[in-house]
Figure 1 (cartoon, helix red, strand yellow):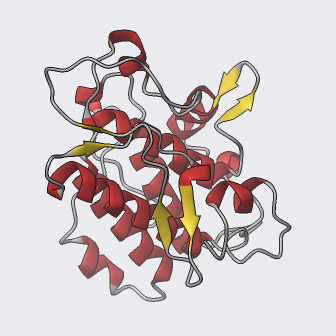
Figure 2: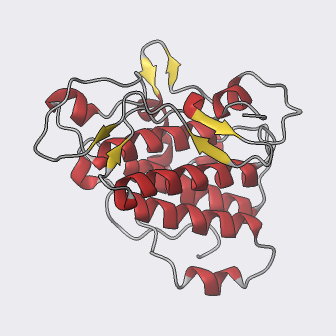
Length: 231
């Protein structure tokens, strides 16, 4: 693809890359990836689990539209099947790793890691003995989002940007829960990312009317969470 892969823009490209310096583009890419996974899980016949959602498998065309690639590990889903555990360390669903039971929630977990990678600018393995989930979840739970965020897009995000990024962070935190039953369905993830993108693009209070039609944001403990600005 003309613009390479997401991993390259997050971790190897110079700061001149438009995706590196734009929160809007980053959320737009995440939304596109979530819609691709939603198609696989909900509309493909038979339903498909990708099994290797990661930033290097997100390719970007000449218009910066994301393309989910590399279906070499993908399988048609049958909930009664067990599978040899494959995937990429750092993105791999811990429940699938322990049980061999593959579910759509396994892709949701990997997408959650990808969302955290986009927010932080760090790789899925932040350090050799520290993965992204262990690094990011305590910071999200503490409510100190500024400590988590990559500084390249905006050293001081605007209040509206912070609203959008908080939405993404809380959605990601739900996606990376240890048990698949506690994770949202991919359709809910896509709806949350759409809301986050609308927040990021908004320059007036009319976004509040849009949000009233969207699913509420719940924190990782299942409680309704007001994000900054009262939305």
